[in-house]
Image 1 (cartoon, rainbow, N blue to C red):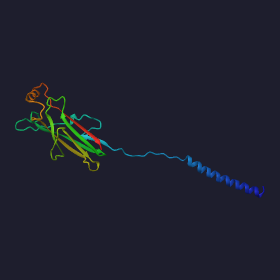
Image 2 (tube, one colour):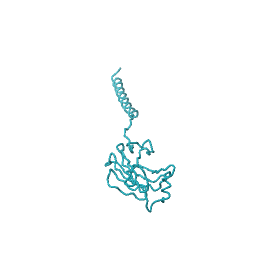
Image 3 (cartoon, rainbow, N blue to C red):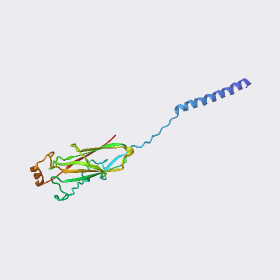
Image 4 (cartoon, rainbow, N blue to C red):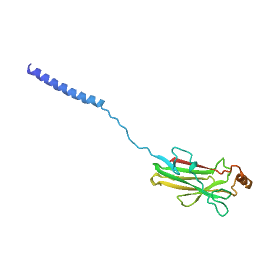
Length: 194
């Protein structure tokens, strides 16, 4: 083999090697792939009312325990015209990661014989008593950055006997002597992310 053939052969091998290396690198760019999952935590939304998580239940009737202390004219733990009492809603926000608004509405139940048992006011964490208007609804905004872990909302209730009464004295008496005297309140709690 002569020198020129050897040079062409070596040059051909070098060119072939360079072409192969370039094509492999170019081809590898099109075959390179990667995948993965982004792991982001979802905000918690698990509010408890009187130690009952409302995430899995919407009926908190068993946790609402009205208390009527009585007075010199009335035995404790009963309702009668002008009786005053309260019930507590202990709210737990420790498993909530967003700002939200809640509202509590308290009205006589349709099944109640006493239509004049109404919410008159509320206090938060044993603070000042705030009177409720005719809607019998309270609304609170809870900011995530400053939210308390827990909050006690005390709802004050009264069997009213005034110009706003729906029942007269005869209806009051009929409720008391009924074979199944019952006074029920409908307590509705709504929580909404803001």
